[in-house]
Structures are given as C-alpha cells and as structure tokens.
Image (tube, rainbow, N blue to C red; front, side):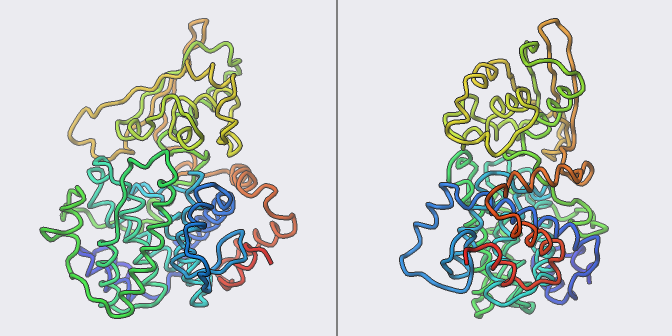
Length: 455
C-alpha cells in the first residue's frame, strides 16, 4: 500500500491509497513523526502568550465552547477554533520546523489540527502519528509539483499546500473512505490561500492557524457528504494552474515516504529559516577562530535568490520584522554565538551594541546561473567574516543544522526544549510532559492535552 501512495499520479489516486493503507508502524516513519510532534508542542507552549496568538483568541465569538483545548487556557473550543489558535501559537515565534520538499512549516499546521481533532474524537497518540505521516506525504506530493515556482511567485506554501496536507491528515484521522477522503482534499483546495507579503506581521503565523482550521473543516465537510471536483489539481482551472505550479507529471517515484527520505528541518534558531545556514557558519567560525566582535570589519553572506527575498528587513523596527532580517539575526550570531527567543522582544532588538554591529553585516543575492537550478535549497549559502587585520574566514553551508543530514545533537535538542518551555511549566510537569511525548504512541490525546492546560 505504501507503494500505491508513492506511485499516485493524482490526488484521487493518493486519496484511495491513503484511505486503504494500514496504520503506519514502521519506526523509520513513526520516530521522526513523534520527534516533530514533540518539537511543535514545545513551540506551541512558547508561542501561546505571543500577541498574535492572544489576538486570535480574542477574535473568537464570546461564549464559544467545544471539546478541544487551547494551550495555556482552561476554555474549551471547537476543534476548528482550537486548531486556529494553537496553529498561530506554533508558528508565532518562527521556531517551528521547515519541510523542505514542500517549502512549508508543515508541523505548525498538521500538529495543531490533529491535536484538536484528536481530542474531540478521542484519538490515540498512535492515531496522531499515523495521520501526521499521511498529511506530510500529501504536502511532499504537492510540493514536488508546485515548487519552486509556487513559492517564488509569492505564495506562502504553509497556508496553501499546508491546508491540503492538513485535510489529508484529518481525513486519515477520521478514517474516511475513498470518496469522502478525495472530496476533503478537493474542498481544501478551495480553502487554501496566503501570500508571503504577510512575512513580518501577525498574519504570517495566523496562516498556519488558518491552514490547520481549513484542514479540519475540509475533512468534516467531506465526512458529511459534501461533493467536490475530482480533479482539483491538474485541470484547466485547478490548483496548479491558478497557483503557479509547474505541474510536471514525469517525476520519478520516490523509494520511501518523505518523512523517512527527506525528514523535517528542525529549527535551531527562532527566525526565518532562510538565514539559518549563514547563522550556522558565523557561529562555527566564531567558536573555531576565537576573535572578538570588535576585531571584525565586516560579515558578507551570499544566499539564493528566494531566501534573499524572504529576509527583506535590513533595519527591523519590531521583533516580527527582526525574525526576517539577516542583518539582525547575523549580528546576534556574531555578538553572542547564539540566537534565542529572548532576542526577539520589542526591547531586545534596540540594544545599542547590536544596532552598531548591524552596520557591518552585508547580504547579497545569488542569482541562478542555469535553468537547471530549480530547487531553492540546492545551493549553499556563502559566508565570509573579515577581520580588521585583513584576515578572512570563509564557509559554504548547504544543509543547516536540524536537517536530516545534519541532525540536532542531544545537547541542541535540550537547549531548544528549555528555551521554548523554560519556566512556563513546573519541573514536575515538565518531566511528565517529556515522558509522555517520548511514549506518544501509547498515550490518549485527551490525557496529553490535559497536561498543557490549566487545571
């Protein structure tokens, strides 16, 4: 059955294969899913008090109620509402993972949707992991047919491709058959949208919340019998045509599910992933060479064109813009040898020592040199630190720390988990949550969520 999923040439074929597939239990697929879910929950905890999350929560109609939890709040909401709030929280601090095949923040959409729907339907952790893998595979399937054209055109793939992947995950969690599964995905195509113009605003993390909500809504509508066009992707008025996808049908068949083949790109730093390869280089050069910040004349970095366009705030005026500023993020790496959540507050971004150093950071765009360069992540980022003495230290980084080829060390995992959760949970509750997440497949979703809300 996995073979059928991988060979699917249309969304209809994928829906049929996914609906019939037995529960996923292979450790090569379930373990990275479990780790991604745990990482996302940590990001959700960190982002629950962010102004964007709180604003979304305030926007909900008074008196709304349901069976699904919002992290940090005793109030229960409908699954769709809880997914929207928790999805915003998961992406609010830009610390959640990237999924390179689709160029999405996959888990910030999938995990809030599945937690909310799973709590409502009394699902288990094993059900959650299984549905997560299927939703991720739909994102990969679409990403291979949409990108890089879709992303380069300005679409925020997290809110477009992400919504359709979330619908697949939710349809899988509800155990829908072929036709309602297919209709759920087709309905999601009508709900998907979102531009990268929102980078640096509250609406950027809201995109993850909206996509999570859309996934649940589409699956519920499909489950209820709402019919939709059976070819929403490749037809003349389909998703690919309207959303700048290349729509190739001659793609090679992958030999494994994307979660095992590509993995997730866990974030080492709470800022736009387009800066991470440069930050990795600066931190490594700094640690290896041992120079002082005052010894540095300038830092130059050259990154691929699409990454360059994402980092459009040379002189950020608030913490949201700072997450999309190479000058600010590179200054943190140079000044402190680390980039932490505490560096992205309204006060932190105006520290005088940082503003002075930012003037020495220069970012340039690497243009494509051939038509064969179609993948926005297949070219390295070049970084050069030049000292006042004239000494130059150079480094090319292709894969940032946290990707499948350069995974986190255990120490880096602990550092991130503590940065996200810190003093937000008591020591006892933190220990219990850690144990629960390590044995996620054996847990009830309602029991897990009970750990994350006030009693």
